[in-house]
Image 1: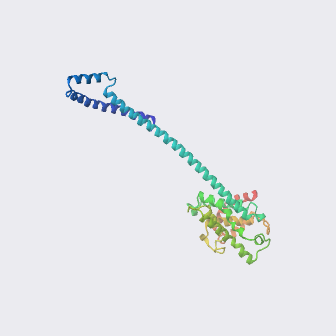
Image 2: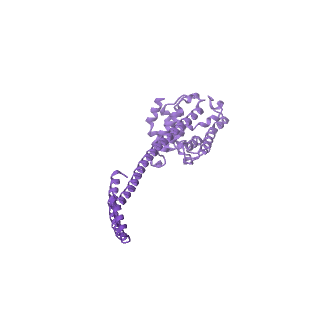
Image 3: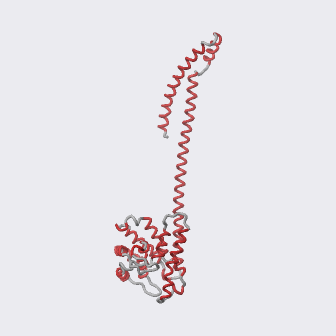
Length: 315
């Protein structure tokens, strides 16, 4: 209720009240005359003398009483408006605090998860900024694919944010692999490689169990992280591990991280090999298009070639 509306309502009420009081006065006058007929002459004189000595007429007394009530109601309405404004301000303040706190909690979660992922990689000194590069590569590819008709409506801003935060979890299962195998400088034996494959199951199961602890059922970056940990070594042609998934059976997030992971591995120095150039890594990836890698993901990578080269220069 604003001031203009309040004034208009009171003026309106004032007019109506006066009209009602005038009507009531007419009725009261009739009552007076009727009453006088039942009084003796002496009683009539006393009654009329009493009315004459009153500073306010009965009509004015009635009108003032009603106006006082109306003013009290108006004061209550104004107080109610003021209280509502204060409540709205308090509500907005609380909402801002909740949003701010939610953002802070998410930041803590992401930093904690990334810290755990780095812990899993810490035994391999050659990995360096591997996790940072993986999430940047995955982010670039996902963003590029979001403009494709093939993935329109599927890859949105939340998806791109989730893959950025969850991609570093791809090898978290390596915490369950012994140093003897994980840090071996030479080629792994068949038996050792079978043990190494288990890091996908260990990582995926760990994140799956963590996801189950969540009280809400909406998909989070942990859901995507689980898919990536399980499936980032699956191949488009079905020859990968651990499940032998083929084509679109492999979660898109895992198909994206698979290429990002291989590209970074090829262009990074390891204890068992030197770093390949961008052109050599690119050629290997192109040859694996439709075999190891999703053709759409390879095409996105090729369209982003300059940005990937920039990442190499930054290393």
